[in-house]
Length: 425
Image (cartoon, rainbow, N blue to C red):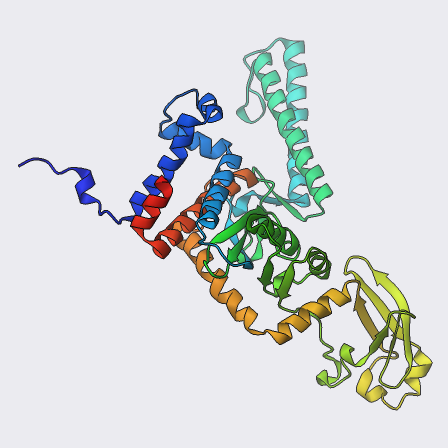
């Protein structure tokens, strides 16, 4: 006849008990850490305060997530030094309607200027006629004070439009997102605004040891920062595995210099001319001393131009050498043969050699990174859409999602009794 206690309805090995233990571990700091006590003013925060904390204190959430990773590492759950890096796009709060380009901003600026001019004419009319009963433009305000207030609002809107136009010009992008300028339209999201979520997952424990939110639409510039972040967490130079989207010779060379070994799938171009039967670049021998290539027929290809954007040097054969060459039908259909050489060719070749020696590293990457993102996007984030604006909000949400994934992963690895004891100290 006595009412049941809730504690009796929750199993002793339920995951929620581990969550409670982790929260209590954090809560203990608020009682013994003087700085935390000063920060909270010894108040017990309610749900609204917690929601505001999530919105305003991204750094605290990121630090809490990092603290759990260090807890797992101190508990020897993370023992390896190989991480798989991957990225995934998640939709931002802003919708596709918020995406505007230079043309839309110019039209908005023109309409804004026309409305300001109309209100200025109305204000002149009110001042001269002292007629406060007439209607403003399109049924707008009628009194001089109301007209002046409307003018101030329009001028504020005009400045905002001008700032957006300047941001767009400085960024070199073709569009900007109203209300969330850090977000970018992502092709994989059907051009919806979104963010690029990056993770580094340790290959033995499958725990996420490092994560970040970036505004880049691709992963081309994320290899080095993610590898360095993972190495800092593991406190040693790690080995990183990534797909072809991360292929960046400059980053691979920088990681080599730090003792961080990389296995990145290749994305190098292939000579498809002549139905793919022409000499590939590998048939040409590079001589660093003369900074030139030698073709299979023994002729030299000399440096022609440098592409700083592509980080490539282009070498060209003499047209006269190609015209008289018996091997030209096997080499090129053009007037002369061109060969490109990456500025970090040695690093790319070293990466290719490592992959050729250990091709199974790509399979290791797939089986490591795909499950965490599937869990985060579809089970933890639910509809795979963020609910907080700007990069800071996205970092806060992603940190919470990563901590939830890691906590559940450790719970499944070690079980409730071990985890409860470890978290309670």
